[in-house]
Structures are given as structure tokens and as C-alpha cells.
Image (cartoon, rainbow, N blue to C red):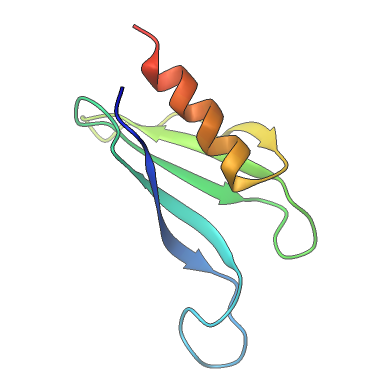
Amino acid sequence: MQSLTLHPDAWIREGSEFASGEVAGYRVGGMPDGTTARIANFGAPNRDDWRVMRINPDNSQSDWTGHYESVEAALADLQITTDRP
């Protein structure tokens, strides 16, 4: 079991300064076998609707899945499904 990690890569901009606002998307580190994943808030900035997308080694992508109340809940579910044999 490898721990997954969050790396901010999308923000709700406040003013003209880059990465100045609330984080709205993350790249997930620690995915197995050349896969990657993203977690994004489709409800930002007014509500929490976090979803997960997996990206395969051949760069094909899954649909966005889930409706989570927090990025932590989305990451926890991704960790569980990633750990399955």
C-alpha cells in the first residue's frame, strides 16, 4: 500500500496574482503502475462537489466520478480503490 499525496494545480483566482485563491484542483501523487489521477471541485467556489478522474499510462482518461464533500473524502476513496488487487 502506497500513500497517495495531493499536489495543488488549480486555483480560484483572487485578483491578478497567480495561485492566490482557494485550491480547486489537485494532481494525485503516488498512483501505481504509471497511472495518475486528478481531484477537482466542480462546485467551487460556492459548494463542495469533489470528483476524481484517473489517467492511464497510455494517457486515456476515465470520466469524472464521485460526488464527495471534501478533497480528503475523495482521496480516501481513491486510496481504497487503488489498494484493491
